[in-house]
Amino acid sequence: MLAFLLGAVAGAAVALLYAPASGEETRERLGEKAREGRERAAEAAARGREVMNRGRQSVATAIERGREAYEQARAATEPARDGA
Image (cartoon, rainbow, N blue to C red; front, side, top):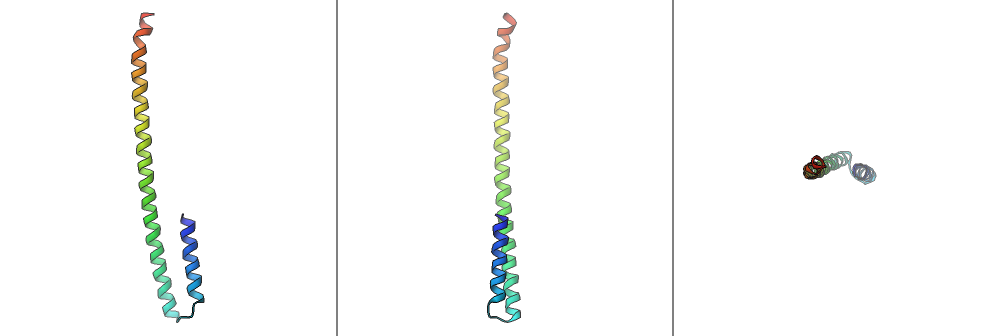
């Protein structure tokens, strides 16, 4: 995703450099596109962090449930071993 964004920004910069405009206009456009690119990258990073946090929480919940199931199964089989 980051590579795509960087490629899009680079492509926009090249297009602006070859477009017929004054140097000042071109610099303003490049600055604007760079700001937009940074904002998009920050948003993508925030979404990525959210997804990672949700995934981490899901894994932690699954592990905890697995431990509980193991403990319940272990507790259920212990009296049978003592009586044998």
